[in-house]
Length: 381
Image (cartoon, rainbow, N blue to C red; front, side, top):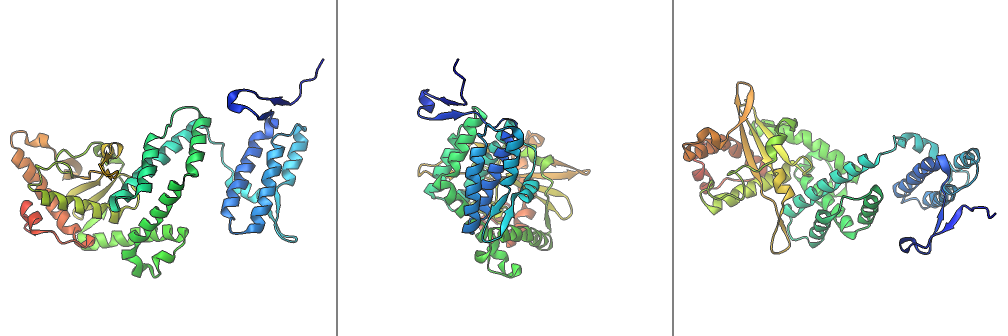
């Protein structure tokens, strides 16, 4: 009787010409985890050729160990022997420390797919923000189209393969470069107070500077505009699912003229890009100092989910603004239902409520409100 071997030739069309090996039993997931770690370290230490060379050799040996038919004890011994990465002379790096530092529960397929969906959604939102600030970037538009059409159904293996292919897409490298450039421009108004050139900052320093600016900006907002940014967005998130029916960049009737509508869009664009360098949260909340009003500013979920593809290949996002009035300690949105018999009164209520906001926020945005805007909103300030 022929003894069944551990190597089996595959002739199916999708795997033609490959050999299938059984894996190293109960230790395969641990070995795979070490492989992922070694590959990540190669990226982290890409500037040190000696370390990368040592890590590549470890990677090859781990690949072979994953297919080992030795008893578990022997495989374990070999795995432990691979924990030291030779660098130069007597110098080595121990992977044990990295393993302990990076150790975390194995991510389930469901958790991975959920993370991928959030990543794709947030990246799409960020691209739309970049296109809103500097339209006409063909590479960003190409990446956005690919993400819109990216299939996130199918098996875990299928989706992981698609994501791995996406990471090699040159358009993604361009996106990361544009995102950095955007963040640099976003930080420039605060460069003097940061005490160093923004362009020279490392990626880590840029993120640290962004956190510093959060504090600076909040202080300016409170001192100059008598407003505060409310980071507790969850209670208001349901209100951002749908666009405001009239106070948006698409509906013309409310604004009275195209010029006023265009000015509103310009204010919203400057406001969003000045106060947020990602669209992860979709909208911003501003609260008046006396807590009489809360203003929701940004892009409704429906606007992000149905971005408008323009004729020239660009994408358009429609901003909106919602106003909430403090009634006995609870905030209620000013809605048309409260003015069923008088639409003009509804418009007046909205315009009266947003006058303090526009007047307060304009100096922080380096904007001067036009006479047309002041007239349309009957601004007395």
